[in-house]
Image (cartoon, rainbow, N blue to C red):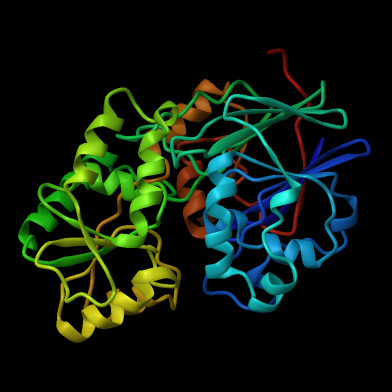
Length: 388
């Protein structure tokens, strides 16, 4: 079994890889890299598109599905597997991040989507693909690919210690592709959530919190200490996410639904509110926050950024200029979470995706089998299978 690392290895963004065995090859995720241009915006798929039998998408964030229209423009004609939540959210992601010409010629292919539920086991040729809940977003999954000889686990984006979502345990495998977004960051999510709550308390008379529409928004709603507003366009999606109770921890759905019912709706034409305001997306690249960040800057309205800020993104520019604060709300594993995932998977050989090259070495100090030198564009052979 072999892996072609097509994006997200030694870098953050354009997460994508193929897994092949014999004549069977599948593609896992097809993301874009915010802040890049030209070929680096897309996965490094040169010469491989015609050999891909099926595409499996872990969730609908731009660094995992944003290159779907581009992939179709390259001639991909095979099936596309995703959960119903990913199918429902992906068109908005493409609207924000696909190249307009590609999107016009190759809009979201609703008629080609093959749906599955987290926990289902899928087939493509001689490959068996097991899935499980990721803990990152509603409908988000990890994949474990088995050819009968070797087993590769690809985490996608996962959160093992979320206060909102359930993550299923990744089983024993021969090679584990970890979500290494935070490197060896040791600060637990509960500590960051308290810091965000304290910041919002200090700015409770009005502030802006840009956030992805799915995933982190629910984490923030759970952490906010008092009344808040949401951009009105978010409400239906948030309601749907909260209603997907199988993806949420016990009791969380009722709590979040109560919080959402009490949230005020805010529209673009309204004055900035005298309470915290959630608006998507998290970087200011697309959606309402792309319009709100300049407005907040002009008005001196406090801004708190809580996620990844690609270099040159509107959020990054504002933060570097000292006009926005930043506190990470963990929506990926911190150090203890990744070590636990690796140990429960049997301490296999490992790769790290979605992580800058200099941080992979730090993580290797805690996960000795991590191949920290692996980069986008390389091919990796899966170690010989061990007894499971």
